[in-house]
Image (cartoon, rainbow, N blue to C red; front, top):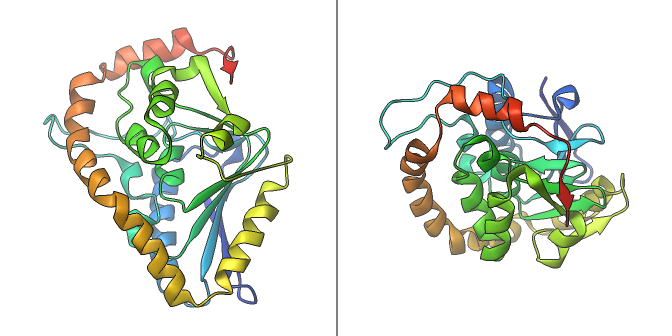
Length: 257
């Protein structure tokens, strides 16, 4: 399985783990389908009242879509087939609180997941970046999620600097994108503590609060997402040019801030 789910009935918390550490927890089509199925199943599991989302291994929370995944795209600039659009809990009508525990890299398509979590707890060695512009791709959906979770200038810098710069966990905490920073390896325990506390409260009140918070921003996100396909179609380089840039500009050199 590319996605593991562990339920603890005594606490009411489920841990959802992206389990492809050999691929830095990148999401292929199989994993995308499993995430969608997982959120939908959790809607009907009354023993689960809160969820922690994390990634396997120490190197990465998630590096977005697996480049080996072949996704056919329509020729129309007004529609797109994006397998990541339905990988998040809110996209699947799950209103149980989700807390993300991040260690290592979180980049690109990872923001589809982080953007739909209630809050993020990160290890000191976590880092955040968006590689799209470096490789001739528009950061559309990712940037829209970022713009709802951090100041505009910070979202713009993260999206536009591509692979040349990464945001540290400390900086992410300073701007409010991350709610707590822990020593490496302690992020999951911190997220579990929060989830267990929330799960101990009346679930109707908790889910109503989650739904209320999301209602404050979902209208803007829905309108933005409706325009995203055209932005992607107009701004993306052809796949062969993207591949050339990926090969030419793939580098481990970056600035951490």
